[in-house]
Image (tube, rainbow, N blue to C red; front, side, top):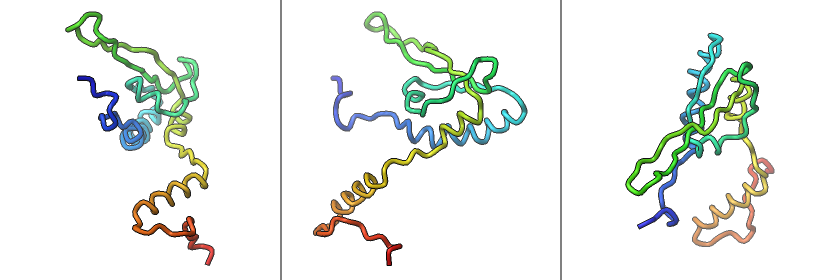
Length: 139
């Protein structure tokens, strides 16, 4: 049975991985390696890399980090094994890549407030009629 199209089929949590794992390691370990004037490499799954913001690329000789992007090739015959291969390498400087990965990208405040109000309304037995969240700073 193929359950991959089902609603609750588990999927990787790349957003959590980048914020909780990749960014802290780049900050601490990568910061030390960069301070020593050494180059580093980060190996990532293609799906994970594609969820990151666009990193400013540089020529190989100008790079501080080589991002090694890997993926799996399906087996050529039934019963075969998947093959891990490096799809490409992306070269970046340390600081610009770190800034891109750790920078917040805020959406529109109106969209956030609308979604927040919808969540509040879902939790209330009797939703408010004013359809807005009070601003505590307007008092």
